[in-house]
Image 1 (cartoon, one colour):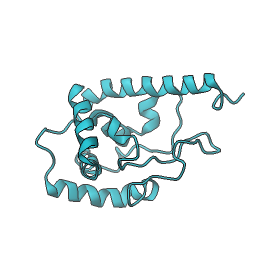
Image 2 (image 1 turned 120 degrees about the vertical axis):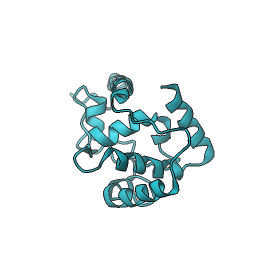
Image 3 (image 1 turned 30 degrees about the vertical axis):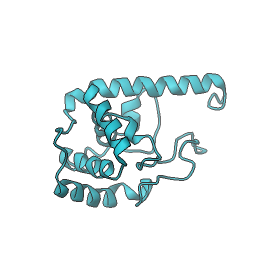
Image 4 (image 1 turned 180 degrees about the vertical axis):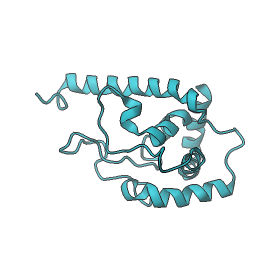
Length: 156
């Protein structure tokens, strides 16, 4: 039975996502993924731009725009790669959550059998490279989104 299109399926989906994010925040403390409040240096942002181009742009787009219809499941049931610009939801998440998603993969963070095409990059990127990619992504957001994301990160 395909629950995805039903109201119950949407409730289950939302519950899994919220529950996974709570677990991710709690697990994020273990990895210490938060940046200092001083912000990243221009060199770190430039490094992040290079790593993003090499490792992330193929799915999330060179312009951070993500894949078309990123909110609608593919025939596989998995979601397309979301945008990381201000039109997406990346800026809604705390630094620790974003760090874990990149390091461990979305499925590992959400849990409960969630399937995603987003792999973990722990074997590909160092923690410093992951933070650099996130610094680059955040550097592209308008002030409103950056401020909101910073406040969410500080609340954790």
